[in-house]
Image: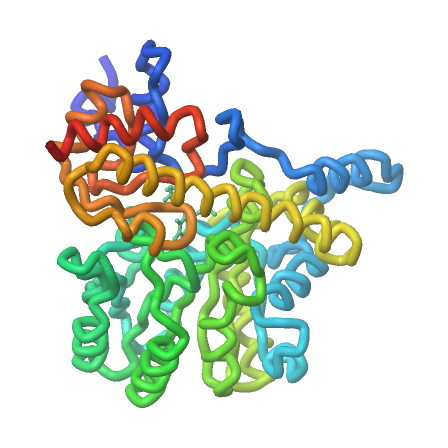
Length: 401
Ligand SMILES: Cc1ncc(COP(=O)(O)O)c(CN[C@@H](CCC(=O)O)C(=O)O)c1O
């Protein structure tokens, strides 16, 4: 007998569970378009050359040890991560108003930020986009926040529901927390224009809504690290406060190293010092201190201008390959004269295409064509190649005719 005999079987994760199902499928034509992880044209995971070089340098360094990091993580990594997202010339950094802690990738950064807010911020409600990354509601609920949604995506236009967004944020209680995807919105691939970002910023500041940015794809959307950080930098430039979760999973290919950072831009240096001290009290009983290897790789690359440049070239290569998959899929559907308007495939940006296919069509494509994607119709473009695009186009064509 077992004390856990009555335990129910938990369901598979809506995103990570797609890979579990894919791995069980013996079909030679199966394609995994579920998890947002980059694959090469040959369909293989990619370890960036610059990452391998950085790792080699670390391994060859005889004085390198495996001691505990401080609770806040690797100091170099934290400073360089803040510079990467806020910009080297950021006034907030110059004025020492940024508290940064290394966390367990993007998820860990969001969770630590959520727990910090639940303990120290007067408004416990966080507004998240509808739809958003499937893990967001669970992360913030378990952190102790009350999760509500704001309209974001318009299925009719397959674009931004900007009026709905403004209305929902306009009617949020003043001081409420608002989660914002910095770029490459997951799952829709739809981002506000810079002008729309400015309107969002003005509305939020006028109601003292607290921005919580999630940046999991910096450099992956446009291929430019600075361009993909423009939304964040507009908010920092106005001198206001915000939270910022960064992930190096995708843009540096460090998925399993769990490398990320949470930064809180504060009103003054004095507040930033106290914020960092309280963040340590959240982290210490959660995982005590973060892993050293991945953060050392990132710091090695970001601090050396030649390696940084090499990284930007490889990053642009990944972004460009995804953009070319968009064009090839769009062209393949046009060739087949597949019913419907598929221009959103080339308009959307970042890792994902929100196809508009419904869960029945997704199930049909899995059954008949061994195409694996999330039930909301999202496909990870990084999972495609010139070889698999015709197969996907055939499947979509069959699903909609
Ligand atoms: C918007 C957003 N925030 C945070 C994360 C968390 O990434 P970390 O690995 O913790 O840094 C993801 C990853 N979402 C991808 C990857 C698989 C997953 O974790 O769901 C996805 O949506 O497929 C994301 O898309």
